[in-house]
Image 1 (cartoon, rainbow, N blue to C red):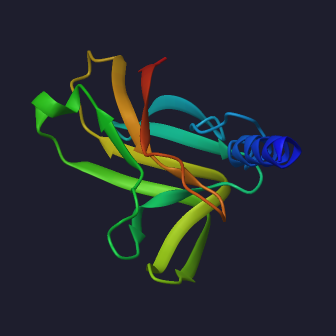
Image 2: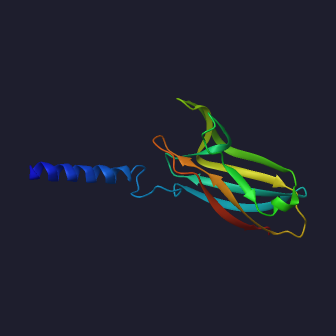
Image 3: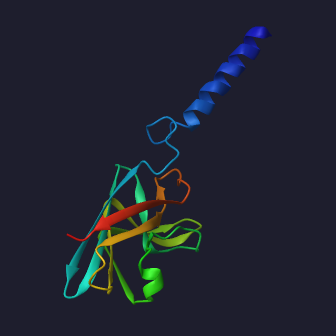
Length: 157
């Protein structure tokens, strides 16, 4: 009986540890599967903020308009300096978009490997430093990480 109990406890411990190893790294229940780089430039009297996501193999990030049933977290960029300016913002995205019909969710749009999110906006000429956050969610074919955000600071050169 003690042997059976010991085997059962051992099996449950291994199964619990395996739950945290999905995706290849123990304890990787976070957004570490994506690396972000941010830059800003000026084109035709407009500022262009680029946020580039480099994703680990097997992981994806949703579009700013992911579709589906409304349960998916869209990738969104907020620039702190724009809140007070109330200026129009144009959002663009690029990469190899995948559109897929997911059971129970509907048609969704996401990116694998690499995705670029751009916002184009007007701001006073004397602004050179910009701060903000990007909100996103990374998923693989088994699970999605909790939606999260990453802060950024960029300087116009």
